[in-house]
Length: 201
Image: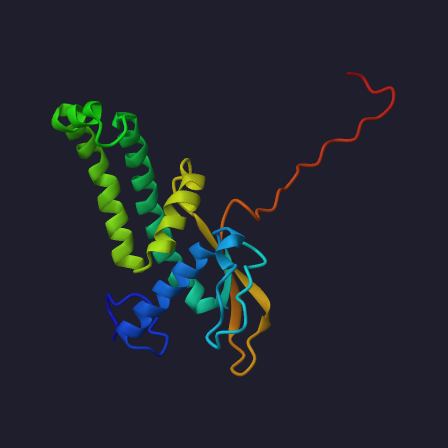
């Protein structure tokens, strides 16, 4: 029996499974980076260029993997939101003086730096937690700079999993996409009652 053992094993051992989820979450966040980042990237053969994704904030995988990756991705976004909030508080306490100048040195030796350091500590801790989880600094930078600010006012539910009608060739696995909400949302417009001529207002 598997009492209190949540999650799918997906035919992999724990280390392989953890690496799989980490890579998929990193790829989900890296789709949000600018197209210029793909300019000099090449495939493993060293010749074929890597094209930027057609749709940002979306990856395609199997349904079971998408459901497992979703919780890890949402946890990372929550940590990144805390880092963004702490960083904005710390930026308000930072000095505008040039580093090494007399004014900067006096700020560094006074209580201003201590307040800035205390305010900046949660942002630094959150960034280190994300690097420990994802093991990819580029993905962490994209997450903190581009993805997390978009969900600043959203309390949760940052991703969605959608089934695809097609099956995977070879094993007929159920395909699905996992994507970040907000960009590709369907807008449902409510129907308005028709206006008739001569109707009383």
